[in-house]
Image (cartoon, rainbow, N blue to C red; front, side):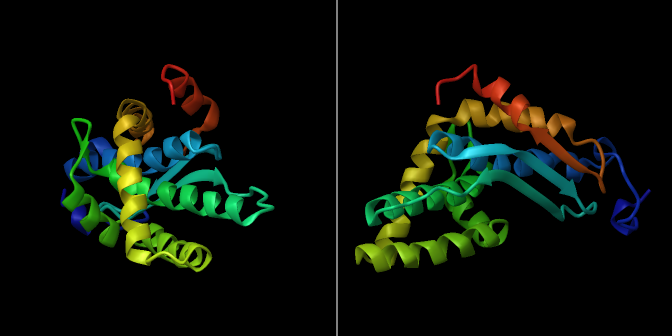
Amino acid sequence: MNYSNTPCEQKLKVSDIPSLKKIVPNFTHHEAGHCIIAKKLGFKTEGLTLLLEDTYGAHIGKAMIKLFEPCSTIDELIDYLNRRIIVLFSGVIAENIIDGKIDNAQAIESLQKNGVNDYAKASELIHILNNLTLVNPKNTQDNLWRESIDLVEQNYNVITDVAKSFADEILETQTEYTFDEDTIQSIVNHYEI
């Protein structure tokens, strides 16, 4: 059967489609990266979702992160923006981790292809941050990118365990899968984050 011509409304098993079987772990690493780094930086998380829309790799993934956090001072707002930008960058960085190290060139390419929504949000927040701090936006972006890399590398094992466990749950296209917070926390409890 030629899967590239299969209508996207039909549910298909991931295990029957080698190209999907190969890229699902990238998607789950991306979302696990957001989730684990958000936890590390003090955000509350509520799980992960992933929907494979077709056999080409179109998907909708989400790390459910509670963004509400009252900021009563400019310093608290600056801290919040820094942490939020790091979380946005952490998805594509986690997606490009090989043996615990980030392939930076590949991560930057992924940011411009797979992480366009994350990058758009981060870029806007960087401009807001720079309006508050009067720092060059390029310096801010570079510094927060490096900090994201460091955090993802430090948390490689837990990100990978969450991503692998979630990937094992993704069985077919056209089904939204949720990896609940309790399951994630049971994995995280084996690590110090």
